[in-house]
Amino acid sequence: MFDVQLAIENKFSRTNIDKYILNEIETSPEIVAKIHQGAGLLDEWISKSYYDSKNARLSQLKDLDLYDLVREVAVHTLPMERSETFTSVVGRVASLLSYSSKIDGIKTLAEILAVVCQTDLFDIFKSGEYGVLHIKSNYRMSDETSRFISQTKYLPPMVCKPNIVNSNSDSGYLTKRESLILGSGNFHQKNICLDSINRFNQIPLALDTRLLTKFAETSTKELDTKEKADAYSKMILDSYLVYTDLVEQGNKFYLTHKVDKRGRTYSQGYHVNSQGSEYKKAIINLHKRELIELPTK
Image 1 (cartoon, rainbow, N blue to C red):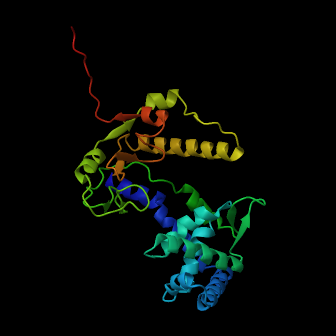
Image 2 (image 1 turned 180 degrees about the vertical axis):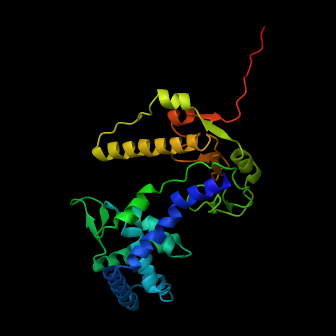
Image 3 (image 1 turned 30 degrees about the vertical axis):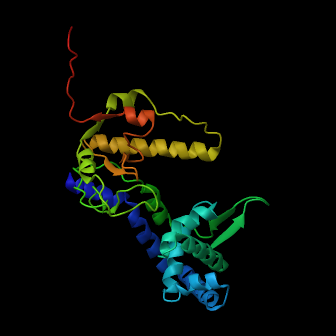
């Protein structure tokens, strides 16, 4: 099952998306030319003089490879199939700059997006006179890349025993390491209950196939727009594909866990989660079942 788990992670991990997108960018002369144009625009923008605090922020960009920076912006913006809010995109790409001040990093990335927008890699626009800013890609990924992106998803539960976590930046999964502390900006190197996380991770679980075949999952919220209905339908379809895979692989799996800054433990999973909706809680059983007999009076 170790080999099966390794294959699952390589197939579904989102960490592989950037490789596909980067390959498509580098093989497109038109996009490469736009990236070079963006690097030139950034160089011109940085070389000008502004107010003191902005000059201090931009001075930190002078030692960066501007082509690489614009290329990373392209990796994050070109695959967008629909428009997204400007603030959400800025938040997603803010990690491209390792500024000591998060606020300075966010301000600078927002300005970088506005400069790179002049290349027409993407458009920045406002939805209505009083609407919020949105970003929309002006390119469409190849069918092969689009199919790969669509098949990637939040990693399903593990079908082999998770790795033992030994630090705050570790993972039970075989191919990735990440913060075990939930929430942006909450990571630290102080002690957390790694032994508790390991104990939770080692509990084998199983799906209740009788419940799955008898009852369907329904939304507890009103799906009052086509977008909401489509998104929910996709989630249901993807979930049942994960359920089917888990059952076919022996119906024995493990959920990984993280803690929040208060030390509370949360299971990780989108399609299968013991702390998800009522339906998702109900379909999970312990793999090792025992008959509990009530004492007679």
